Length: 415
Ligand SMILES: O=P(O)(O)O[C@H]1O[C@H](CO)[C@@H](O)[C@H]1O
Ligand SMILES: [Mn+2]
Ligand SMILES: [Mn+2]
Image (cartoon, rainbow, N blue to C red; front, side, top):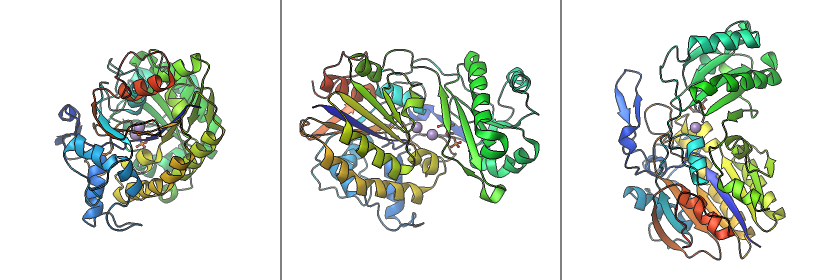
């Protein structure tokens, strides 16, 4: 009985992307930086080792299980730096490597689709202007067709900072908050109770229709709760409205062959429901891990279970919260043995990421990095698989493992 579990740690890059210099950002003082040298795992480990990540945790990054399966070595091969404080003498039990991204963007959709064999080789549309980011005609049409009293925002922002700044005004006026980032996104934040969740979703569906002409990857509903600036929090009811992947992914091929594809967390949203046979909601690293174990317990032959651990990115990477990111990794690490234990003789476990989001880096956006490509199972030969020249090497390996038709990109590690 062959099943594959993909645990994708959203934003857990391991440094080293050769094209990182082409990904630029702007500091608040107007100076420009780029992603050269960014390394999500490497820099978290360094900060922990140097006593710079002591908020709610302490000391060197404690992830022995992730290190043992191959993350330390993969990071070393990718970036030339073994993560500080991790035991360099372990002999990895997994097949470990690092993958380079072909897609033009460093966003979630590009990363996931490329892993599944469909790199995004076209340019997404972006709302690049930091202020007055959206075309006036788009804003006017949204206001008119949704019957809104106006809008707030219309700028680039971190999603939590914009609630501190505009959340109270939104409560007073009922005007939705529109914002974007370096990603190809149109995000709408509204109070879940006063504006209403269903109304926010309807507004996002309309926005989805209207931003198609700008080639925007996702519209994201960002409902929040709370009564004032000091206590606004984003709720678990985030919903992403994605365009459909441009061609058949690994997930479509598994579904078409009669197999099962179980989405846990954001996966179904990211693939616009394409190729998914069952979608399970779960929240938090703990909830997502529990759901992954539960689904594996029930999974039949020829099943892919695909879990996106969004919290690494949304709660810690974008928030530039090094201690929080480290704690979440340490928690994930304590759970990993439960997954290894549950794998059957013919099962495959894949641990990976979709891009970086180095919490030590300037700005609040993603960072262009290699991703880890870790394969584990009784049928997997431990040791280095080196550089995968596209993230699709991961999907191709899974397609090969399950005897599915080959993907258009990537080389299988089993060949
Ligand atoms: O700051 P928040 O709202 O978390 O936004 C982040 O999440 C969005 C989608 O991944 C990106 O636009 C990124 O900037
Ligand atoms: Mn992501
Ligand atoms: Mn993100």
